[in-house]
Amino acid sequence: MSITSIGSSANLTAARQTTSTAGLNNEGKAYLEQLRNSNPGLNIVVKNIGTDKQYEDFMFSAMGTHNSVAVPAGVINRMASDPSYAAEMEGRLSNLPDELAEIKKACEAGGSTVYAVGAVVDKDGKITYWAIGGDSRPREAPGSKNKEWLEKQLEEKREKAAEELRLQKAEQKQELIDKLINSRNDAEPRRQNGIIAIA
Image (cartoon, rainbow, N blue to C red; front, side, top):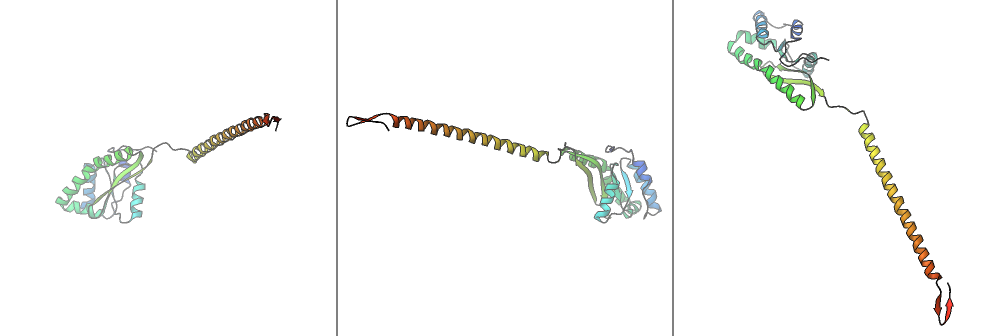
């Protein structure tokens, strides 16, 4: 899978051509084109997102195109008719490429591979950021850690058994030596009342 870099406008033209303008009035449609032209680093999509499912669908549909931003038709229509609201929202939207680049950078610093990053604007103009990524650290084969642990446990048990066997043999040798010494001491002649007795 190729990943388009943050701020790049590659793949954005194709993505823009397939986006809907449903819900936009004529002023909103004209304003959307102006907004897209003034923000070439963003893939601005007209989309009303109200549920988690819609949010997820939008994120996954944006895979491979960084900086996708869903903006409700109502927000774009309001921007087209309210210059002060338009100025506020345009300022916030123009900062998105840098903010999304920071999010991508933070994710990658944490060991993730980032496949897509973007934002969703809700009907009140609140912006929520999102990223799709995965762990980029090398993966071990399933069970390899368990195998290593089992091998270590087995080696420790072998070492312990060998040590116990060595100690057992040493104890047996010592017992044999003690028996020989005791039997030798018992076999030595003893004198009692002038008589030599051998046990």
